[in-house]
Length: 167
Image (cartoon, rainbow, N blue to C red):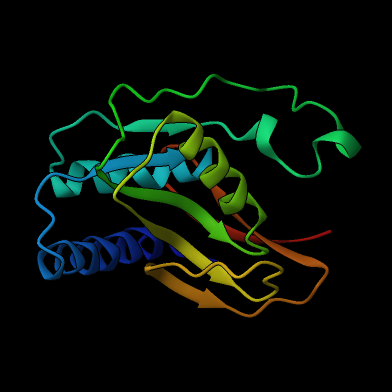
């Protein structure tokens, strides 16, 4: 689906849009948190591009998913790494694909277990149709329409690329 430069072009656009959002809202010292795994890859790139001072936070939402009781534990659960206080801070939450909104709901639940941020801004590389919860990204690289039997996947962590897969 994507050529070698597509993801980099999307990241460049997102970094520009994010800089403008931070400027417009007079936010000078945000925290960035990537959702494991694809969101963490995107966040790593944006974190470097924006030269954010604080270390990058990583969030594994496996225990916060609403389908946990049905599908069981993810065999690759990793600990979340949030090496900072989030209280009264502006958080940039990054994920690779926004689809149903359930991943973001789980991430928000976990974030608020760690503290009370001043605001949370959602940044996603791809937004696709099929929302089940009222979740909207502040910054999105691109929007795609896919059939119900298709999923979009970010491949990485190096040489990031997008592919569409039939399920």
